[in-house]
Length: 319
Image (cartoon, rainbow, N blue to C red; front, top):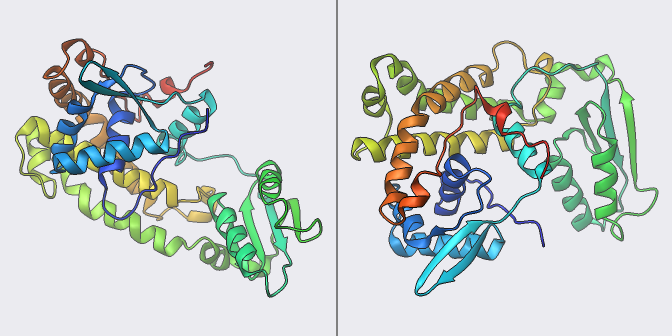
């Protein structure tokens, strides 16, 4: 079975993205199909029209993320099974990748030499290196903290036929010269743009986090853009927060904290995100269950929510 592909997160959550967040948050690692009408109702919480919701479901099915089944006239969709490794990678990326990691100061360096007429190959290579978390230190020199020989070897294999045997060179356990400087390293990973994203997240959601001490209703009132009844508003709010958080974490190269500094806004952003996400979990789960219950009572009791605080429990030791 081909690996399901998830939609890329963009500015502003799209229906496909919202649905993947909803299923990840309340239907984690479950195989039971959900009636398509229930999925449509879930997206209507976000003012997605029924036709827009059905189109999003179809696109996710085409990508392999959802698998459709039919029972009479009713169509239902299950989340395509994912490997233990894929699930654990996803969990760590969202809930644990901000934690301080031990780093010995070593780097993986990747250099390449391509002819001028290989612009297409150069573009593909640069895109792939960015996706692997490398930063562009100099013109054809890319760097990433730690030892990542395995991922670069896989990259070379995937580009077999595009890269010659001597066109890409990898160094591990390297040390950057002092002349490179912290500012150059931060520029290589475009940390200023990332910091702006985290700061905007804080500005948008910190008032809601500050209202937690007054209860859920106060949080909903303090949050931007909510005009729904309380149950749906909490579900919308928590899902919107996680959709934004996913976007930021996918953009973040997850550098060692030594390269970020104590004032990097990621530290404050994760505090805001985890406080809201964890506190709103029970009420949002109730909203998710209410929508399922209207379509199939037995499914509603299977919905769950998870938290930053207990995210380690989501890691799977076997398939």
